[in-house]
Length: 257
Image (cartoon, rainbow, N blue to C red; front, side, top):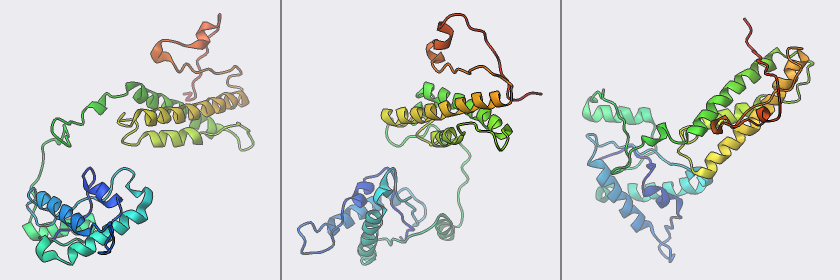
């Protein structure tokens, strides 16, 4: 077969490329034959699942490009030795693109089967179904939604400010935090705990900035002269502001009719 091949995510080949490859035969760390054999075995198994002789393996995964030079160097070395012996290995490696790959597949088998059924629940191994993230970390999911509401108010007040108004803060910090929280391992709840804590920390810092901006902006426009407070622990049925004696409640709309 002559595959358009890149290195797969979620496989044993990621550490294979992240660890150094030594192609000098005199080196005590010489490991090219072993690496080539491991890769060829992996490709033989992959080929059994494809109708076409062209196989795309998407290159990389989480944190693979923290040292991209080493990653590409290892890949180049592996490709050189694989392609030097295509007869024994049974395949050729090239850098490709999705469009080039699809062209090669269509030329080799003439057409593709239409898939209309749902791919969920997705599993990447026996009994390893990726369905929990629809409900995992509900507090973080809710906080992302709440912060989006704060961000919209913040943007409205910011947009209504005159050029000379000094708001003392901007919506930028919360904009950035909201952008990061849309990552597929953020709002989904599939990150590690310390990472989830950092997402919440960033949102909280951005929310604090926006609350300062909104308070100052409303005062400048004489819409509301009091101090705005946020109850961030309502999921625990607790709000410090309401515990400190008698207070009046004011409702402020930033979107008047």
